[in-house]
Length: 353
Image (cartoon, rainbow, N blue to C red; front, side):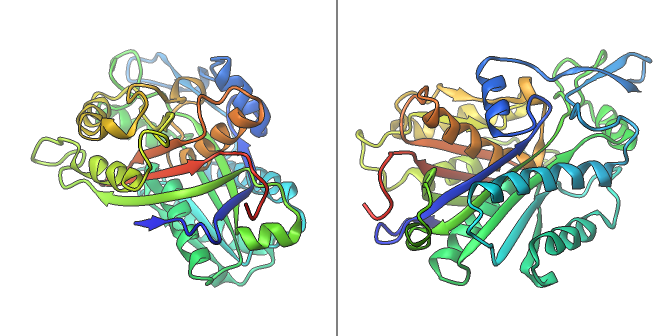
């Protein structure tokens, strides 16, 4: 659990996005707001009946491009956009949120992405850490970055999340486990690929650099679901409840009720049921617990990239004047059981006030 220190907030000063519906933050947010879908029948991938699979692929990438290079290209694009927003800031640490181990993932992927990002940022190898924790990884990386900054272990942290299901073996495994949305599975999820990035600094650093603060982190909490996917006992949302309850525990209600949620619901039934249990237990913290945005129908399931992308959507909603309120909650859950929730403060004010 991490909570803000009002004397020196943790601020987001840079954002980046690369998705099936946009090559940057503004394009992606506009497409999601408009309900535009990047899902299309893929020219290479078919299901077990020979029917084309609907996939939210990055349109700028060649369908023949290998998985490692796809993820590297998306990661670099999102990171570069976030850095360009605050060119005076040079991060001294970076966290890369990655998928959990799964069929089709190259064994050298984690090291290759870390090495490439270290070179791009001019950091030593140990300055870039990887967090292969799946859907929750992006928000867990934000949680870790906030803690490092609060402890003054770092001055600026770049958080990048990247994921892609663009691999035949991965899709085959998902079909076997009845998780891929296709002609034979109605309750599966639509696969996608994307990257998102956030640049975080302490408020004192933002003030000194004269940066525009896009959002402030209020709290972050990580928990573990004792009965995750493929467990022997039914999941009743204990992990997600714990993360959401901790992240909203110290809100001044009702003035600071959560105005909207951004989440990784993707069409799989078990995720919907888990959310139902969690919202019933934490609904007093929300203006409307059923008011949530799950963009998987636009950009597909983007796994480890979803956390930073949720931040981008929330910040852009305020910048463009359509935010439902200043206090969004972001949450996600990984197959292995990790659950993470992050509360943001979008109240516009000058740094230091």
